[in-house]
Length: 348
Image (tube, rainbow, N blue to C red; front, top):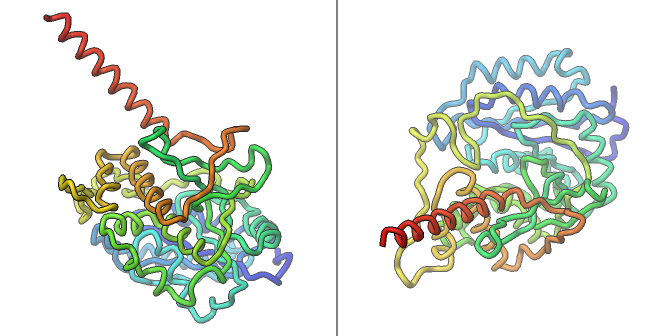
C-alpha cells in the first residue's frame, strides 16, 4: 500500500545494544508493515562497540537482519532502511546520527525516535502525521512526564495519561520509550550541540543527563521554543522478546560485571555544590535508584527554569506509580523503627 500523503516527510530512527538485536527484528516488522502511511525512511543506528561494556556488535547478526528487512515478506512496501555505524554515545544514539546526514536537513521533516523494546501499532505513521499537522510547533509523545518531588511527597514524577480525557496535555519531558515525535526544525543543524554537555558545570548532573537522554533532549527542545505535548494515542504495544542485559532503570543478568560505570556518591563536605547536594540522594539500587536519579535531574532542570508544568490530580490525569515504591519503603522503615523501639522499651 502506498503512502496516503507525501507532503510531510516522516523518518524513523532507533538504536539498540548488541543483546537487543533479536528483538529489533520484531520492531522493524511493525514499522515496515504500516497500514495506511509508510515511513519515508528508517534509520537503524548500530555502533561497532557498546561502550558501556566494551562488547562488539555481532556483524553476522547485523548482516542477517539487513538481508531480512530487504525481502518483500518483511518489507512489502519497499521502505528504505539504512543502517548507520555511529560512535556509541549512550541512549541518545537513537537520534543524534541523523542530524549529520545531508539528506535530513529539511526543517519540515519529522523525526520519530523509536524505542527498541516495544512493538509499534500498525497505524503509527498515519497518527503521527495527523497530530503533527494539528500541532506543527510542538514535539509530541504518547508518554510524557511532569516533575514531582521525591523527598517532599514521595513522588518523583507524574506520567501524563492523556487518553483518560482524550485530550492533549503539556508535559515537562517527552519519554523515549513512548515515541519522541520531533520536527527537525527544533534540533540543531548537526549533532555537535546535542552532544556538547559542557554547559552543565556539575559533573554528577552531567553524567545523569548523558544517561537519561529524555531530559537532555527535552531541555534542548524547550530552549528552541518547542511545546512538549502528550497525545491521547496508544501506539506502543507489547514488549518484544529479546536478550537485553542492560536497561536504563538498572542492570539485569551479568552485564554489571563488565560495566565501567561507577556509583555516583556525594561528598560529606558541608560545602557541597548544588549538583553534589542533589546527587547525595543517589543511594540505593534498581528502580528506587532510577526514581532518585530522575528526581535529581528534574530538580536540577526545575532550578534552571525549565520544568514548570503542574500535575493536576483530577480526573487522575497523572499516575503516581513511580512514587508508590518510595512511599512503601518509607512506611516499612517506619514500622521497623517502631517495632525496634517497642522491643527496647519492653526489655527495660
